[in-house]
Image (cartoon, rainbow, N blue to C red; front, side):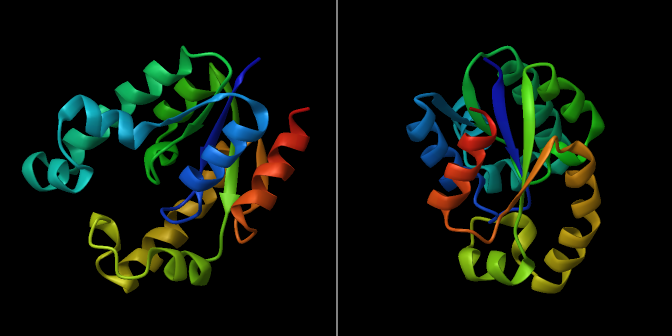
Length: 163
């Protein structure tokens, strides 16, 4: 069986839905951001601060290549990962992409005032980024799910699509 790769904007529920989906389907859950943090021994915010976004994007590309080689996993990608065609090409080698299409209002509620989101410190800039990325998520997706749903409902809907 192929991997199920979740994409969407930060706060769209990729990690929460992914963990729930992994439980429902009896698969392993992998978060590319966690993979990068573990390998680098530092948080993504610290990687951005110390080495910059370009360096982080290279690490992210390597994570996409690694996860594409796995089988039967639920993979949550970072919010920017699948806005790059090279990453989409890599992950699609190993599975199907599901876009969690959450509204900006719901995302703001979920994130709140998180200091761990380097690209969400300014809400106006975050909204601009959200608008810029949406078409890229749609282009990358094999399936689109309502990201405003509860994590449980979204996970059940995704599981049903792959049964």
